[in-house]
Length: 201
Ligand SMILES: *[C@@H]1O[C@H](CO)[C@@H](O)[C@H](O)[C@H]1NC(C)=O
Ligand SMILES: *[C@@H]1O[C@H](CO)[C@@H](O)[C@H](O)[C@H]1NC(C)=O
Image 1 (cartoon, helix red, strand yellow):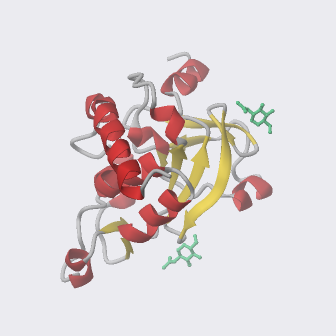
Image 2 (cartoon, rainbow, N blue to C red):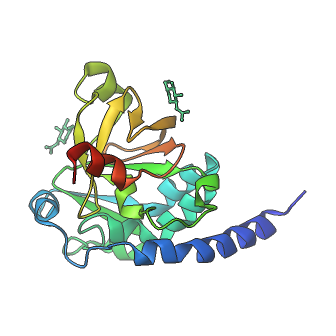
């Protein structure tokens, strides 16, 4: 049996190998206008400990994504690393701040989808700035044709069926859900070209 340590080491090597994919992606230095309007710091905020999220994601078998979230969750969530004034917990533990009662839904790709470092794979594109859950699909508020804003500055994702976005299926629902951050597991990365071609961009 491979020890947990060895496994973690292998994953870190894989991670370091795949990291340039994300660094090359358009990580916004400045949040886009919609993001600023939605997420700008205010008195309404939820402070969420990162540990609970990365543990749930790791335990569900999405180990690479768990390691990535450990380092990048706070930077991808708009204003996620901006702590409310006077927040002690924020500095005592690793935490991410979600302002204005928003919800971010993260779509974690399976470990296998990291094996080829194709440059269209963008971490920010896996973060939808809205609540996407089974209830939404059941009620029809999330249905075929609905476009969702992501943390990538240039692309939205397109719902194309029940539990399916950009032709990628959700395979693991609610790996984590505290109302402000939701994580589902998906078969692969979302490809921005899917949305662009639907718009003829
Ligand atoms: C936050 O959003 C939830 C669900 O969308 C809602 O039930 C709740 O009342 C909201 N809280 C505040 C403080 O607006
Ligand atoms: C996604 O789910 C749909 C419906 O459940 C299924 O028809 C389709 O084959 C699945 N796609 C993949 C790539 O597995």
